[in-house]
Image: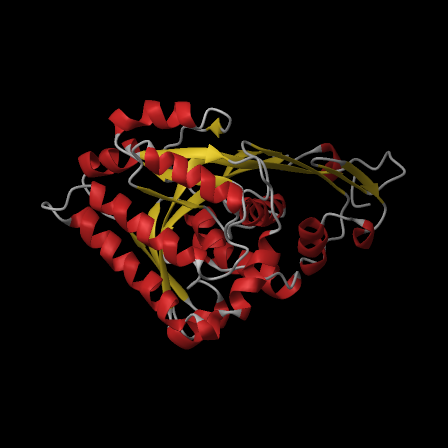
Length: 338
């Protein structure tokens, strides 16, 4: 039995520049952190006592004899890519709902690859894990997704991630004082809009607009360095970070008419009227989780004004995807291959 724990993430600046269609021509960068909400995946070799060979448990249950019968696209894709032969039982549990802007799909892919390789007795570096997850989502599954979520999930921590024109990436941890980090965290509020959305569909609409949004994307890219300068400056108040988030959200909304909608705009306007300095919808847009940036003394009023939404307290996390249980000598292994 193998169990992995893989974090979700929030992205502050630079979203959009992490798509290959953009950074292979211009380069890109994001400022993002993983948070203490997780995707858990358990894998074990399935004992050979059942009519089915594979059992997959998530929001539904699949019992199948062949990999190509699996309906869950990521599981089918990863197992096919790995040329998996032994019978498996895979369980998935998540702290927060899927399709909500926190990179949950990529956390799932990262955690699944980590689990399966550990089950085979293979160790993998964080960089290799991120690269493999990017390959699976972009090349095997042919999804319209960026490259930041997989890296944040694999590495964990608060990072500046740079995307190079040759397709490679590098990860630079954000080194700030514990006081500054605590100040930043204390200003963050996370609300669930209740809307799940199809992120690849929204992402495709943004990708299609890239050629007409060069100025906006270059500005979003530059905001990564502006955000870093604010955090590192002894003279810049943390409120400047919130105001930059507001500018970033206004730009992000212009990338596609699918990024926001009347309900999302109403949520943000309500938060702003009650003292929020900035914020943004997380992920591709259209719904999911909204990050609000506000001073602690304003937060009670904001929570009251948005009481119909679910408020989720969050903290940064620094572990990335980890194997939290390793017990390889399960029943299926002792009784041989299926």
